[in-house]
Image (cartoon, rainbow, N blue to C red; front, side, top):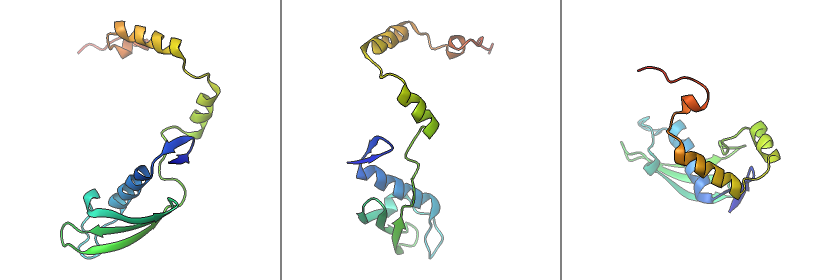
Length: 123
């Protein structure tokens, strides 16, 4: 298991991200057709930075061998660094917090506008 930005991350997760990036940004060199995720296969990788892939075009069946070098980060976080620092300073959630939230949700009617002080808009 890998650690990135304080969170556990599996090799499969990184592979999915590399394939997703390739599908979004690459296309067949023969017919310019975009790849689908199922067209791309991971052959090998080294230290989560160098990936050897094979892509088979679903349109013309041309196979391409691709070496992807991951530089920097591939959108691994949902929070900004400032948000992470903010939440790191807060105390951890404890049992009382969970019980309080459970009690709140028991009676919550789903009206987020009312909850946050905005009147419901008439439909």
